[in-house]
Image (cartoon, rainbow, N blue to C red):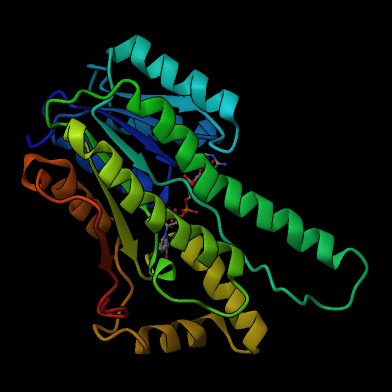
Length: 266
Ligand code: NAP
C-alpha cells in the first residue's frame, strides 16, 4: 500500500495509460478521481474497480475548459478535502502539417487541430495544476506528474503541434519544480515512447496510410527502431508513475524520464 489514503486526480483516467495508472494507484490504497470527457469510460473503470468503499470516483471534465477544470477540482476537494497527487495525463494527437495538401479548408482544419492539441496537452495541464496546487499539502506528499512523450525530446515531421505541446510540458515541469520546491511538492515528466493504446493505434494507422504500407508493416518498422524492439505496455508507465508518486520519489523533481525501450537517451 504505497499510496494509502493519498488523494489522486488522474486526467484521462478512463482508458489507456491513465486507466492503468488509476488501477495501480487504487490497488496501492489511494483515493482516485478520474477525469475526462467520456463518462461511459470513466464509469466502466470505477465500476470495475470499486469494492464498495468508493475510493475511485469519476468526474466528467474537458481539461481544455478552465471552467470545467475549476468545477472538477472543486468537486474532488469537496469529497476528499485535499489533493496530494495530480497526474496530467489527458492528451490528444494527430498530424498538423505546416503545408497541408492544397485543398479548400486545409489550413483551417490544421489550425483547429493545432489549437485542440495545445489547449488539451499544455493549457489543460496548466489549468489542472493551478487549481490542484491550491489544495496540495506542503508536508512532502505533494506530487505533480506530467505525461509528456519522447516527442518532447525530439521532433517528428508532420507532428509540430504534438511535439510543441510535449516539449512545452517539459519546460512547464522544470519551471514549476523550482517554483514548488519550497513547498516540498515535486514535479516530474514521464516521457513514454510508443505505448500500446488507442492513441498509438491511431498513430500507426495514420503513418501507415501516409507511407503507403500496412499498419502491421509500419508497426514492425517502428519496433525495429526501438533498441528493446517493442512497444511499452500502459502498466509499465503506471509503475514508473507509482515510483515517482510514492515516498521513494520524494527526492526527484524537475526531471523528464524516458520510458521508451531506449529510443531516446537524453
Ligand atoms: P488514449 O488512449 O487516446 O487516451 C487519451 C486520454 O486522454 C483519454 O482518457 C481521453 O479521455 C483523455 N482526453 C483527451 N482529450 C481530453 C480532454 N480535452 N479533456 C479530458 N480528457 C481528455 O491515449 P494514451 O496513449 O493513453 O495517452 C495518455 C497520455 O500519454 C497522453 O498525454 C499522450 O500524449 C501520452 N503518450 C502516449 C503515447 C503512446 O504511444 N500511446 C506515447 C507518449 C505519450 P476522453 O476521450 O474520455 O476525454
